[in-house]
Image 1 (cartoon, rainbow, N blue to C red):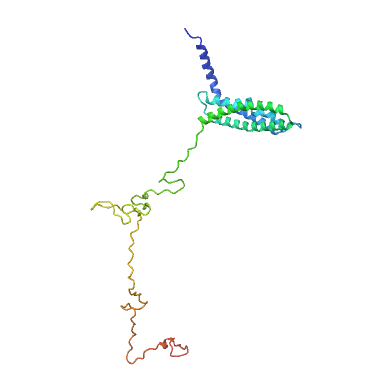
Image 2 (spheres, one colour):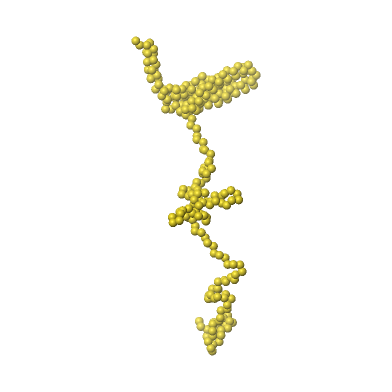
Length: 294
Protein backbone atom coordinates (compact mmCIF):
# COMPACT_ATOMS: atom_id res chain seq x y z
CA UNK A 1 0.00 0.00 0.00
CA UNK A 2 1.52 3.31 -1.10
CA UNK A 3 1.24 6.66 0.64
CA UNK A 4 -0.75 9.43 -1.08
CA UNK A 5 2.19 11.86 -0.61
CA UNK A 6 4.53 9.86 -2.83
CA UNK A 7 3.22 11.16 -6.20
CA UNK A 8 3.52 14.76 -4.99
CA UNK A 9 7.14 14.32 -3.88
CA UNK A 10 7.99 12.74 -7.21
CA UNK A 11 6.44 15.64 -9.12
CA UNK A 12 8.43 18.17 -7.05
CA UNK A 13 11.65 16.35 -7.79
CA UNK A 14 10.93 16.32 -11.50
CA UNK A 15 10.05 20.07 -11.46
CA UNK A 16 13.32 21.01 -9.75
CA UNK A 17 15.27 18.99 -12.26
CA UNK A 18 13.58 20.92 -15.07
CA UNK A 19 14.07 24.44 -13.65
CA UNK A 20 17.51 23.97 -12.09
CA UNK A 21 19.47 24.33 -15.35
CA UNK A 22 17.60 27.57 -16.11
CA UNK A 23 19.21 29.37 -13.16
CA UNK A 24 22.38 29.90 -15.18
CA UNK A 25 20.35 32.05 -17.58
CA UNK A 26 17.72 33.52 -15.24
CA UNK A 27 20.12 35.22 -12.80
CA UNK A 28 21.99 37.30 -15.42
CA UNK A 29 18.74 38.23 -17.16
CA UNK A 30 17.25 39.55 -13.90
CA UNK A 31 20.34 41.68 -13.20
CA UNK A 32 20.42 43.01 -16.76
CA UNK A 33 16.73 44.01 -16.67
CA UNK A 34 17.21 45.85 -13.39
CA UNK A 35 20.25 47.69 -14.78
CA UNK A 36 18.16 48.89 -17.76
CA UNK A 37 15.41 50.19 -15.44
CA UNK A 38 17.97 52.08 -13.33
CA UNK A 39 19.48 53.68 -16.44
CA UNK A 40 16.04 54.79 -17.66
CA UNK A 41 15.33 56.32 -14.25
CA UNK A 42 18.61 58.26 -14.42
CA UNK A 43 17.68 59.68 -17.85
CA UNK A 44 14.22 60.68 -16.58
CA UNK A 45 15.84 62.52 -13.68
CA UNK A 46 18.39 64.46 -15.73
CA UNK A 47 16.52 65.13 -19.00
CA UNK A 48 13.33 67.28 -18.88
CA UNK A 49 10.44 65.80 -20.86
CA UNK A 50 8.48 69.04 -21.45
CA UNK A 51 8.65 72.75 -20.74
CA UNK A 52 6.69 72.45 -17.47
CA UNK A 53 8.93 69.83 -15.99
CA UNK A 54 10.84 70.83 -12.84
CA UNK A 55 13.75 69.13 -11.19
CA UNK A 56 11.75 68.62 -7.98
CA UNK A 57 8.87 67.04 -9.89
CA UNK A 58 11.22 64.69 -11.77
CA UNK A 59 12.87 63.71 -8.49
CA UNK A 60 9.48 62.83 -7.00
CA UNK A 61 8.64 60.47 -9.88
CA UNK A 62 12.04 58.81 -10.27
CA UNK A 63 12.45 58.01 -6.57
CA UNK A 64 10.33 54.88 -6.98
CA UNK A 65 12.47 53.80 -9.94
CA UNK A 66 15.58 53.71 -7.74
CA UNK A 67 13.79 52.51 -4.59
CA UNK A 68 10.85 50.45 -5.83
CA UNK A 69 9.67 46.89 -6.21
CA UNK A 70 11.93 46.05 -9.14
CA UNK A 71 15.11 47.57 -7.70
CA UNK A 72 14.51 45.82 -4.36
CA UNK A 73 13.38 42.31 -5.34
CA UNK A 74 15.21 41.59 -8.59
CA UNK A 75 18.86 41.73 -7.40
CA UNK A 76 18.29 39.69 -4.23
CA UNK A 77 16.27 37.13 -6.19
CA UNK A 78 19.15 36.67 -8.63
CA UNK A 79 21.56 36.16 -5.73
CA UNK A 80 19.32 33.59 -4.05
CA UNK A 81 18.95 31.64 -7.28
CA UNK A 82 22.73 31.54 -7.72
CA UNK A 83 23.74 30.69 -4.14
CA UNK A 84 20.87 29.00 -2.28
CA UNK A 85 19.88 26.35 -4.80
CA UNK A 86 22.17 23.34 -5.12
CA UNK A 87 24.48 23.14 -6.89
CA UNK A 88 25.82 26.68 -6.57
CA UNK A 89 26.38 28.37 -9.91
CA UNK A 90 29.95 28.80 -11.11
CA UNK A 91 29.31 32.55 -11.58
CA UNK A 92 27.67 33.02 -8.19
CA UNK A 93 30.42 35.38 -6.98
CA UNK A 94 30.12 37.58 -10.06
CA UNK A 95 26.31 37.66 -9.78
CA UNK A 96 26.52 38.67 -6.11
CA UNK A 97 29.01 41.46 -6.83
CA UNK A 98 26.89 42.86 -9.68
CA UNK A 99 23.81 42.84 -7.44
CA UNK A 100 25.75 44.77 -4.79
CA UNK A 101 26.79 47.32 -7.40
CA UNK A 102 23.18 47.84 -8.48
CA UNK A 103 22.07 48.30 -4.88
CA UNK A 104 24.80 50.89 -4.32
CA UNK A 105 23.80 52.81 -7.47
CA UNK A 106 20.10 52.74 -6.53
CA UNK A 107 20.83 53.80 -2.93
CA UNK A 108 22.88 56.81 -4.09
CA UNK A 109 20.29 58.21 -6.48
CA UNK A 110 17.38 57.17 -4.25
CA UNK A 111 18.77 59.27 -1.37
CA UNK A 112 19.49 62.15 -3.77
CA UNK A 113 15.98 62.23 -5.26
CA UNK A 114 14.47 61.92 -1.78
CA UNK A 115 16.31 65.02 -0.53
CA UNK A 116 15.53 67.03 -3.67
CA UNK A 117 11.83 66.18 -3.47
CA UNK A 118 11.63 67.02 0.25
CA UNK A 119 13.33 70.40 -0.15
CA UNK A 120 11.13 71.35 -3.11
CA UNK A 121 7.93 70.48 -1.21
CA UNK A 122 8.99 72.45 1.84
CA UNK A 123 10.00 75.40 -0.36
CA UNK A 124 6.51 75.40 -1.95
CA UNK A 125 4.87 75.31 1.49
CA UNK A 126 3.21 71.90 1.06
CA UNK A 127 3.92 70.66 4.57
CA UNK A 128 1.22 67.95 4.73
CA UNK A 129 2.20 66.53 1.36
CA UNK A 130 5.86 66.53 2.44
CA UNK A 131 5.00 64.74 5.69
CA UNK A 132 2.91 62.00 4.05
CA UNK A 133 5.42 61.48 1.28
CA UNK A 134 8.20 61.29 3.88
CA UNK A 135 6.48 58.40 5.66
CA UNK A 136 5.97 56.46 2.41
CA UNK A 137 9.54 56.95 1.26
CA UNK A 138 11.03 56.02 4.62
CA UNK A 139 9.07 52.71 4.53
CA UNK A 140 10.40 51.92 1.07
CA UNK A 141 13.92 52.79 2.15
CA UNK A 142 13.62 50.36 5.07
CA UNK A 143 12.60 47.48 2.76
CA UNK A 144 15.39 48.43 0.37
CA UNK A 145 17.94 48.37 3.21
CA UNK A 146 16.91 44.84 4.27
CA UNK A 147 17.32 43.43 0.76
CA UNK A 148 20.67 45.18 0.26
CA UNK A 149 21.93 43.97 3.65
CA UNK A 150 21.03 40.35 2.85
CA UNK A 151 23.01 40.55 -0.39
CA UNK A 152 25.97 42.17 1.36
CA UNK A 153 25.94 39.52 4.10
CA UNK A 154 26.05 36.71 1.52
CA UNK A 155 28.98 38.33 -0.29
CA UNK A 156 30.85 39.07 2.93
CA UNK A 157 30.47 35.54 4.26
CA UNK A 158 31.07 33.51 1.10
CA UNK A 159 33.26 35.52 -1.27
CA UNK A 160 35.15 38.19 0.66
CA UNK A 161 38.83 37.36 1.19
CA UNK A 162 40.56 39.73 3.63
CA UNK A 163 44.10 40.77 2.83
CA UNK A 164 46.70 39.33 5.19
CA UNK A 165 48.05 41.94 7.58
CA UNK A 166 51.84 42.14 7.94
CA UNK A 167 52.97 40.96 11.35
CA UNK A 168 54.92 43.43 13.45
CA UNK A 169 58.67 42.94 13.38
CA UNK A 170 60.34 40.86 16.07
CA UNK A 171 63.59 41.91 17.67
CA UNK A 172 66.47 40.30 15.83
CA UNK A 173 64.59 39.88 12.52
CA UNK A 174 65.08 42.05 9.48
CA UNK A 175 62.39 44.69 8.95
CA UNK A 176 60.79 45.19 5.50
CA UNK A 177 62.89 47.54 3.40
CA UNK A 178 66.16 46.92 5.28
CA UNK A 179 69.00 44.90 3.72
CA UNK A 180 69.30 41.43 5.13
CA UNK A 181 72.53 39.89 6.30
CA UNK A 182 74.22 37.82 3.56
CA UNK A 183 74.21 34.08 4.00
CA UNK A 184 77.41 32.61 5.35
CA UNK A 185 78.30 35.48 7.67
CA UNK A 186 77.91 35.05 11.43
CA UNK A 187 75.49 37.20 13.34
CA UNK A 188 76.70 39.76 15.92
CA UNK A 189 77.68 38.13 19.18
CA UNK A 190 78.49 34.75 17.57
CA UNK A 191 81.94 33.36 16.77
CA UNK A 192 83.31 35.29 13.80
CA UNK A 193 80.84 38.16 14.16
CA UNK A 194 81.07 41.71 15.44
CA UNK A 195 81.53 42.43 19.14
CA UNK A 196 78.41 43.17 21.14
CA UNK A 197 78.22 46.14 23.46
CA UNK A 198 77.69 45.33 27.12
CA UNK A 199 76.10 47.33 29.91
CA UNK A 200 77.53 50.76 30.78
CA UNK A 201 80.91 50.89 32.60
CA UNK A 202 81.72 47.35 31.45
CA UNK A 203 84.11 46.25 28.70
CA UNK A 204 82.75 45.21 25.35
CA UNK A 205 82.29 41.48 24.99
CA UNK A 206 84.14 39.89 22.06
CA UNK A 207 83.28 36.62 20.38
CA UNK A 208 85.60 33.75 21.28
CA UNK A 209 88.61 33.36 19.05
CA UNK A 210 88.99 37.02 17.96
CA UNK A 211 90.43 40.30 19.15
CA UNK A 212 93.03 38.72 21.40
CA UNK A 213 90.69 36.24 23.05
CA UNK A 214 91.84 32.60 23.42
CA UNK A 215 90.32 30.26 20.86
CA UNK A 216 88.45 27.15 21.76
CA UNK A 217 90.07 23.75 21.36
CA UNK A 218 92.41 21.48 23.19
CA UNK A 219 96.14 21.24 22.93
CA UNK A 220 97.23 19.35 19.87
CA UNK A 221 93.94 19.81 18.02
CA UNK A 222 93.56 22.12 15.03
CA UNK A 223 91.84 25.36 15.81
CA UNK A 224 89.15 26.96 13.75
CA UNK A 225 90.27 28.89 10.70
CA UNK A 226 90.12 32.69 10.85
CA UNK A 227 87.13 34.39 9.26
CA UNK A 228 87.09 35.04 5.56
CA UNK A 229 88.79 38.28 4.41
CA UNK A 230 90.29 38.91 7.85
CA UNK A 231 93.42 41.08 7.58
CA UNK A 232 96.54 39.97 9.52
CA UNK A 233 97.36 41.97 12.63
CA UNK A 234 99.50 45.01 11.92
CA UNK A 235 102.59 45.38 14.12
CA UNK A 236 103.63 49.05 14.28
CA UNK A 237 107.34 49.86 14.21
CA UNK A 238 108.64 51.15 17.55
CA UNK A 239 109.33 54.85 17.54
CA UNK A 240 112.81 56.06 18.60
CA UNK A 241 113.10 57.27 22.19
CA UNK A 242 112.73 60.91 22.89
CA UNK A 243 116.03 62.78 22.62
CA UNK A 244 117.83 60.19 20.48
CA UNK A 245 119.87 61.65 17.56
CA UNK A 246 118.15 61.50 14.24
CA UNK A 247 120.29 60.35 11.29
CA UNK A 248 118.85 61.50 8.03
CA UNK A 249 119.56 59.70 4.80
CA UNK A 250 122.71 60.87 2.92
CA UNK A 251 122.22 63.18 -0.06
CA UNK A 252 121.92 61.70 -3.50
CA UNK A 253 125.33 60.86 -4.95
CA UNK A 254 127.19 60.80 -1.67
CA UNK A 255 128.43 57.60 -0.07
CA UNK A 256 126.92 56.69 3.28
CA UNK A 257 129.10 57.54 6.22
CA UNK A 258 128.96 56.89 9.88
CA UNK A 259 128.89 60.59 10.66
CA UNK A 260 126.41 62.55 8.60
CA UNK A 261 128.28 65.76 9.41
CA UNK A 262 131.61 64.44 8.04
CA UNK A 263 132.94 66.48 5.14
CA UNK A 264 133.74 64.74 1.88
CA UNK A 265 137.41 65.27 0.92
CA UNK A 266 138.28 66.77 -2.42
CA UNK A 267 140.05 64.76 -5.07
CA UNK A 268 143.82 64.79 -5.00
CA UNK A 269 145.77 66.83 -7.60
CA UNK A 270 148.77 65.43 -9.47
CA UNK A 271 152.15 67.15 -8.92
CA UNK A 272 152.77 69.79 -11.52
CA UNK A 273 149.06 70.35 -12.23
CA UNK A 274 147.18 73.36 -11.22
CA UNK A 275 144.12 72.84 -9.10
CA UNK A 276 140.93 73.89 -10.83
CA UNK A 277 139.39 77.00 -9.51
CA UNK A 278 135.72 77.33 -8.81
CA UNK A 279 135.52 80.48 -10.87
CA UNK A 280 136.60 78.59 -14.02
CA UNK A 281 133.42 76.59 -13.91
CA UNK A 282 131.35 79.62 -14.68
CA UNK A 283 133.62 81.17 -17.33
CA UNK A 284 132.06 82.07 -20.65
CA UNK A 285 133.51 80.45 -23.78
CA UNK A 286 133.93 82.54 -26.89
CA UNK A 287 132.65 80.98 -30.07
CA UNK A 288 135.26 82.79 -32.20
CA UNK A 289 138.15 81.39 -30.23
CA UNK A 290 140.06 78.94 -32.45
CA UNK A 291 141.20 77.00 -29.43
CA UNK A 292 137.60 76.37 -28.42
CA UNK A 293 136.48 72.97 -29.61
CA UNK A 294 133.33 72.91 -31.60
